[in-house]
Image (cartoon, rainbow, N blue to C red; front, top):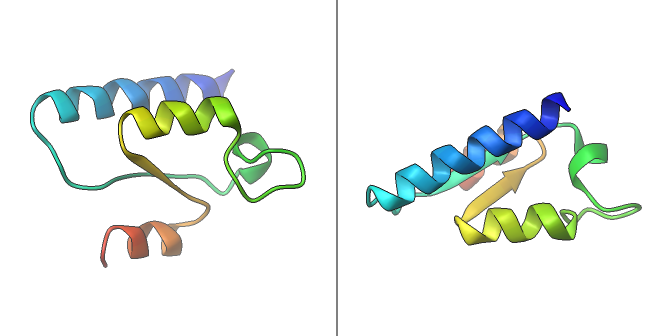
Length: 72
């Protein structure tokens, strides 16, 4: 339940940022890949993936990857 609340809040924030004209990258970082990846996969589960794609959100499995995706 906790992860669901975090993701939903992140989706709302991303939607508001996009509506306000933000075109930069938005990255969601979580090392909890068991929750977000499909079974035996390194790809996001379909429902999460479609939600993230709708707001151009990228997923990073750690902070190093998130920094890379953000260009740091």
